[in-house]
Structure formats: C-alpha cells, structure tokens
Image (cartoon, rainbow, N blue to C red; front, side):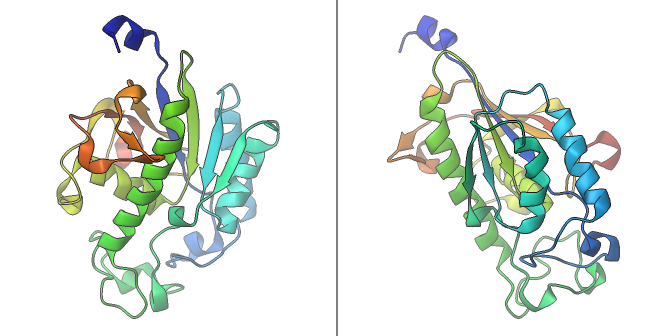
Length: 240
C-alpha cells in the first residue's frame, strides 16, 4: 500500500473502562470472579461514564460478562441500539480462588504475583496470557474493518486487567517476558494500579492496516515496532 493510501485510512481507537463501585470495593475485599453488583453509587458512576462518552461515536463493545461490568455499560448502551456488543469470558479479572471475598490485606496488593500458589488462584502469568488472547481476538476482528473512517471500540473489563495489559504492552518490569515493548505512552498516560470508574483509558493504533492479522487474530510474533500508543491512562495524582 502506498504511503498516500495509508495516510487516507482511519485509525483504530480502543477505549478501556472498568466497573463502578461494588460493596466489595467498600469493604476492601478481593472480588476476582465473584459476581457482584454495583452499589447505588456505582450505578451513578456508570451514568457519569456514559455522560463522559455521550458525544463519542462507538462501533462495538467487548465486555467481561460479570454483572458489575454489565451494569456499568448499560447506560452507555441505552441510546446506542446499533452498537455490536460481545461478551468475552477472557475479559474477566484474575481468578483468585479461595482468596475471593478475603481482605486486601491477605496479599501484597503491590506485587501482581503475590497470590500465586494460593488455593484455586489463577497464576498471574496465565491471567496476562488470557488478556493477550482476548486482545488478539478484538484487534484481529476490528482492525480489518477500519477503512477511511476511524473505528472506536470500547473494552469494558476490570481495573487489574487494564493495568496488566498495558504493562504487558509496554513490557514494564512486572510484565516483562510476554513480548518486547509494543506500546509507547503519551503525556496523558500515567501508570496506575487500577483505573477509577470514571476514567477512560485510551489506546490508539494509527495504522491498523499494518498490524499482522491472521485468521481473525492479531499475530503477536509478527508485530514490528511499537504500533500502540497509550494516549490516556489513569490520573496523574494516582500514578505509581
């Protein structure tokens, strides 16, 4: 493809959002795959998120099937009947086995592998591989659909998922070894432990046609350079 044709093609925008407040958040309990509901405040936060994205065109939404995520995106979808919506089991947070429902103090929350080895816990490295598998499907499905117009996709998942995927794309210290650095950060991207419910983390692919997609999947082993730009991530005052 000529450089002039490439410049005429649209971009792929990936918007990452997390759920609103749950009672477990208030009680500082680990949720993992616990299927919790939003509190009244969490529902209000979901409407704040929808208002924040009111003028944003959205082509499709991929989401964790857990109730707190489904409830969070309901206001966002209420006036978008034509948006394609896909539930994806791989967008759940890390499975925490017998630690689910336990206090945050039961593990070192600053160490992503501190729960490894506990009964029923999904190994952190397996969790990151699962996130990458979901991301490969999403990008593999969406990137080929970008033509002259931009395409915007919402990925509704859990705070630990957003942070872990972004760290894996950057190959930052806690997520080294999954791949070489594939993403750079913009000036509004601040590494956080998890995003707030009203944050919208934004990942940009400026040349989606250049991504290696095979049989509907992003081919991680064939990616060259750093095609992903983390445009926005968390709040500066909460940066790690």
